[in-house]
Length: 147
Image 1: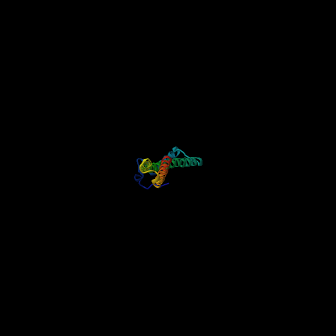
Image 2: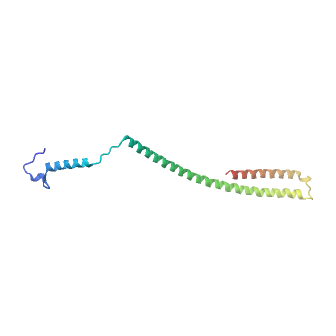
Image 3: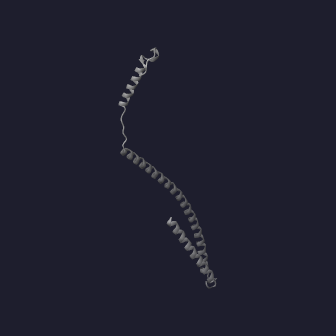
């Protein structure tokens, strides 16, 4: 215990001596500790909370990955649309060329003055070109249908 000096005035505050203040503080701290809720965290609680946090993070990761995949799909869709437009333009160009070749071929076959026998080589070349154009047309249609 603390000894009192000869003058008691220095040791008094609000009517209590330092010793009394110390005892009151100890009693207050003891009462406060007694009223404090007692919590014991078990291993089971640690495991459950750890599993819950991991589960939540995995769900968030899956959602983020799905969002990223959706954004990438949008980019792929726009690229596919551009390719479809380009292939459609090529198809139209080949269609025009095919129509022109077909018209020339029909004109040669239907011309009575020239006769078919004089232009057999020209007709064969035109037939080859028509077959190639049909093949290209079919390939373009196949590409458009597959996308």
